[in-house]
Image (tube, rainbow, N blue to C red):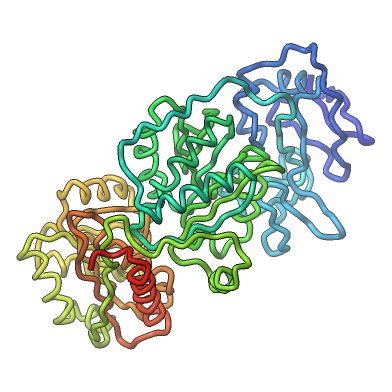
Length: 497
């Protein structure tokens, strides 16, 4: 039976329509769902698919008649996709309330000029006549196996952070973990994840970058071999899996609703999470009302740094890497007007010599560029230095393959945008930033880029150089932050030098 919403009630829709033609009348409110009928035998498959999610009808591969039966018995609730509150529009999926991100189109469902949210359009169109479907019945049950299979040993600061993470999870508290790049943040999470799983808590590890999801997933599957783990990103095959441990991009959190007992935001300072309020809304919406939140970052925003210093924020600082060697400090090299030189098909001399040296000693290197166009245009010039030089960026169809080839040492030097500033670990590598004065290279970005060097205990040092046409505050602040972390680590006796 299909229906519309009239006079605040669900009524039959006598027109012969498919489930995708369903539309609530946009000017009326969706009624509260019926009381839960405990004697109704709900679908376990539908329960596992919908539990903790907030989805469009088009995203649900079940018949509308099944959804309607579950609605009538109180297991499903329909929410309006877009509604007006206090004379202000709001998208209930992404939280957008800025008028500029709403637009009208002639809708085939409601046969009117219908509003839709442009802000989250990449996740499927939410309109005024779109219902969002959530599960309000019992949560899926079943004992979670959370045994940690890891023989490694945490350093003293790592163990301190691990214990604080467990405490935050146990007490449904919030915690900021401020750890220098290469401190071993993932390993610090292991015991907290084990504690949460064994206490039947559902966990999300969210990160702004797909690359980080792809990096974390095999590592966590290896140490939690008996736990079902879902990896969610654009095009992921795990999007229909219900699992106690979810590793996801922050964009995928738009599709969750009161799902997680533990929300871990990795790289909380990274673009786009750091600048997009809707992603923060999504992370908050995906948490249960009683839950814990753990933030991980090497470069917290200035406000958080001040709160940490004033002891107004629950936090733990790890200033040293697990191998007890200092973080390599970037050096600055002026390279003249590199843009004009590139336009003339010429690589500035000191950049050319830096690349040649890496080729001669067969050492892998990453060269970070501020813009895709510049990088792609100069790739042929760099290949004159050595043919085994590749480039990669966010829109590259072979992005995953190139990063994997870099890990396997099949690529010697890789030109890249800031997509590889975090989440990718290559043991023995040098790094250069081309045009470090560009606005895209913020303090946090430069700290993260510097953090690619010296991460392995076998190769704890390396060269990091900022090639520039003028120093910026961000460059100086990034270097000073790394120097300060090394000083704190040295004073605490956390370095072997």
